Length: 437
Image (cartoon, one colour):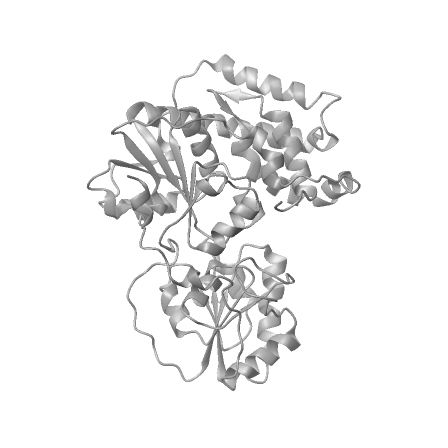
């Protein structure tokens, strides 16, 4: 049941098995580093694939990773504070008057934005938190243990290369610094719950792991479309998702149903400002980019612009960048006179969606948001199915297929994808904040 182990997950399980016994300040180091390790695998995919070419496993991802999750039972304490990722504050602020909250920013831009909102107090910026004084020999022991593991004949070859040894030493030293900072924060505030958009990435992974070793309850609120990388294994005590299709995805991948609840969708990175749609003479094509690498994104933009040749005087291509993107490269790649690049936050996303006659995206939450309001969406992907889309996927990746779709938009005859579970479009009245009580 659930997705089986491909080469990325086979190496991931090796990593968890080898390094989960290593702890610092009572926190196993492997799980907080899992997502970064998977990025390391992708950067070294040629060697990683070769080492697992003939390896097979019948286990699902969740099943294979469960032995390495932190086994804990949250304490049911009265009072205490909820630690909230600063950029995830909007779904829970309605309860701030009745529940003490502590806000933590991990990035400088996130901290500056949070500073402008006086409701986000007390507010901390992770790199500026004073590190807890933990005997230095504890760090030495961890690094020595890692050295022993990476030299052992029982350790898989991928975890013994010089490149990996350098990578893990840098990662673990940074992780230990952050754990010392978390210890200081937990000493200063009685934190009984954490609320994060990811409990596995490099920000939420160590926060969640530290909290669980202190028997705090950990909540993951869905912040994007689900996938095996970044969302599995399920390690939070409670997963709040946007609708039934998302529940079905997690449960079908082995996540216990009792740990998954539906909460009102709040698209944190999109902004919900009230906007009035502007009138346009040209048909508006919204292209929502994803952080899928320079080569992929450059090729995608050039194919879309190429598909619009000959009809560009009737189309406007609006390239909406992901929050992690820098606009300089994208402005260099775009050549069309009818192409506009919008950095994240430069214009309300819901305005771009409202004005769009078509949305094109590889796998962005923007596509899901657009489907919820009935906008035509075409996916730029080779995948034949997506878990929240009904039936075969309407997709296009070639200039010819994109050109055909553009012509159908101009003729007002575009057909589009539909939600697999119609009730996704009828969200529950249970807000994310209601699950904090």
